[in-house]
Structure formats: structure tokens, C-alpha cells
Length: 247
Image 1: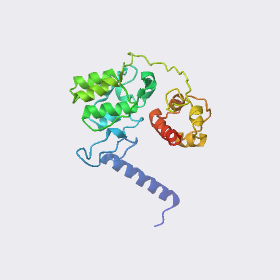
Image 2: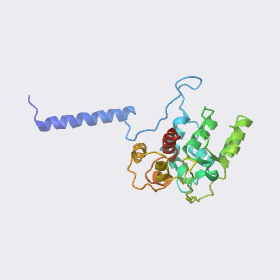
Image 3: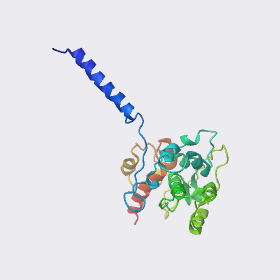
Image 4: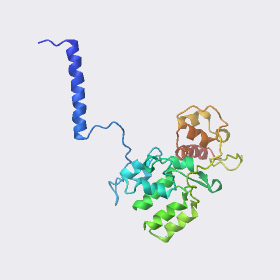
């Protein structure tokens, strides 16, 4: 018996739909990609999710799904206003937008801060960057939960802590550009023109950004936030390039 083109098309569609229904029944069909961090591959924590792989695009719900810490605890640790939006809907990169550069440019609160808190709360290994800071509420939550293991950890947190956000208030970013001949550290007030003056080409910058650079005089942090890019990640790549060109 011959089957016409219309019959073949109906058969193909039916087969595809049948496969989807079967996958949904088995729990294997995913309409939204899940964010799953890499796991430790060896040692004491082999097979456990690694907090170092938390990305800026991870929501607190994603973190809660992969680590033994709830979204509500994360929101409390970083003094986030859950009346603005639910704790589960905050993103790791929101910390960068809300806090940003702190301690007179000595550091910042961002995704790395969240990684550090999750590691301390869950007892997993993680080494934060030297410029990683946390709000004092992180210390309070860890202390109240009995998660601060030793005096050295507490001392490190105290040294790298700042005042938390005021409830319901998003701090304004005041950009004061100060150019330095000797200091080639990329900070929140650094512009692309600064980086280019240090020897990096616009083409190299765009290769890292993945988006066109329309204005060299634009503040790097502001440009990245506007393009939904994570400042801490891009800054590290640009800084590595700048450092490689240092005389």
C-alpha cells in the first residue's frame, strides 16, 4: 500500500509528538535548561557540586537546587529585599549590580562573594579572590547557623566585610574617574580608553566582550551591566591581558 506525502507528514508529526509525550512521562523532557555546576572530580568531595562553578546567571533557586542552602538564607545573607522580588528570583549577578565596587575600590561584592558564602555554609572548599568582599550580614548568618569553623575564617570575613544594603534601597553608583599612570588595575571607574592606553587593542577587548565596543570612553562596569555581562568575569580576563603587557 502506497502512502502519500500527506500521510507521511502526519506520520512524522505523530512520531515526534509521541516521543515528546513519552519523554515527559518519564521525566526526561526539559523545556527549560537547568543550571547545574560542575562537580568535584576527586578527593573528599568527589561527586559534589563545586561552588566555584556558580555563574552570574544562576538564580538563587538554581543555587538552592544544587547546594544545601535555601534561597531565603542567601537573600538574608546578602540583605536583599524580598518584597521587591522573591528570594528564589534573585540572580548571582544581581549582587554585582546592587553592591558593586566597595571599600574605596579595594574590592567588590558579586558572584564570587556568593560562591564564598555557599562554600562556607556548606563546608565545601573555595578560595575567594583577594578583592572579594561580603556584607556583614553574611557573617551574622554564618555565625547564627554555626557555620564559621575557626577564628581565622572569622577574621578573614571581618577584614573583608562592609555594611549591608539598606532595606528596599538600591545604592546609586557614583563614578569618579581618576586616571593613574602607574596603577593599571581595572576598577569600577575604569574606562575602555584606560585599558587601551595600557596597550590592549579594541579588537582584543571586543574578543573578550563578545559584543561591539561603541564608545571607548564608556565606563566598563556600566557597559557590562547594560549588556547583561558579568563584571567580575570580564574584569579578570581584561586584567590578565593588561598584566601580560606590563613592562
